[in-house]
Amino acid sequence: MQIEVKVSLDGVVTAKLPDRYRDRQVRVIVEDEDERLSPQWARLAEILDRAETLTITRRSHREILEEVRGFRESV
Image (spheres, rainbow, N blue to C red):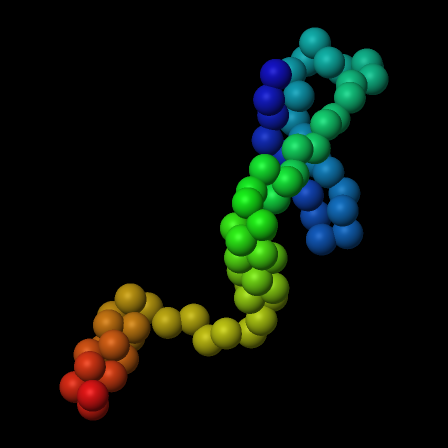
């Protein structure tokens, strides 16, 4: 059985399981997706994880397109 869980910033796992598992001990196995990636993809995933923590100004797709068009016209 596969279940989806939420992991909080402090590492606490929260999961909703079917009633048949209530008052029973269950085993949770975490399969890290990075372990299955090639070294280049693993490095890229690491970089993207770090980028998500940065305070980068969010822009709409229209703002991004305008910036790209402006860049093209300046070249």
